[in-house]
Length: 190
Image (cartoon, rainbow, N blue to C red; front, side):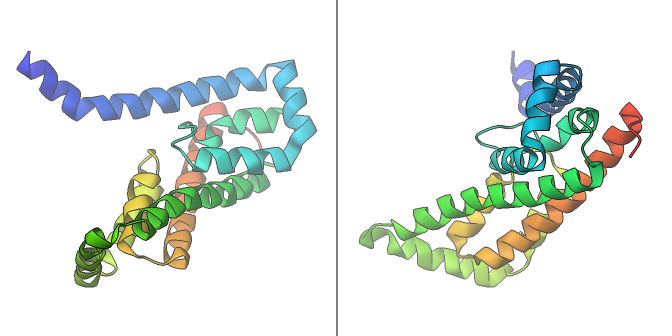
């Protein structure tokens, strides 16, 4: 029984991420072959992609990355490079939801808990750029919600501009790599 807990502890999150990504890819392919879905994609086009990317960027609401729907966007006749740019921008804006959660949490600290903010400032001063580098690497290479780091960094007092540009760069790397992989897997011509 203990061995099973260890396996689930270490491999459970990886299995969940792989399952969600596989579901997203499967669903993206299914959508690309569904006339109703294609009609919706065609009707809402690039604005729909952008809005969908904002929702998927706030991954706590919808944990499937918008980039997994690339085959459906291509099947609808949309420009793949432009769709990827919209996904990157939308996801980065979606990550701002996590920033607002962290900032709000810091602002609503009760007067007796203000020492927490002071302690957090000391942590921020000590590590400075390290957490931002971690956020970039996390956003670029780990397909789980960026909010896992965005919320705490916002609570630590990192500025919106710092977090936005780091997540934008990370999302650009992640989505570019994912798009290239999806294009190769599905042999989508651009």
